[in-house]
Image 1 (cartoon, rainbow, N blue to C red):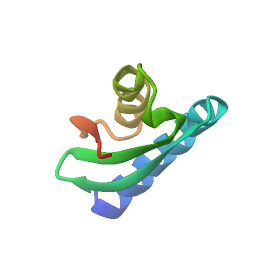
Image 2: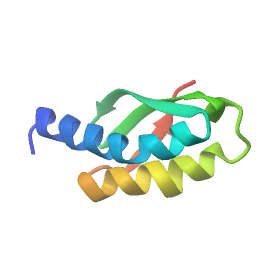
Image 3: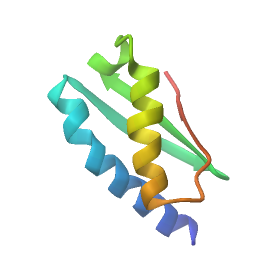
Length: 78
């Protein structure tokens, strides 16, 4: 998969999860992809949420891996 295709797949995954984050007053922005690591920034209510790491792993990372199985990790850059 090319870098452009990978980015598009990650964006599709974020578009799928974004409505759930927005319903709680948050959002997410793709900062970049380095090798197999996706860097995102949680925004709004997500920044101070006590369960944002669980959301990042169980929601965001799982959804991204569905669209781009080669991704190994998703990290939040605050």
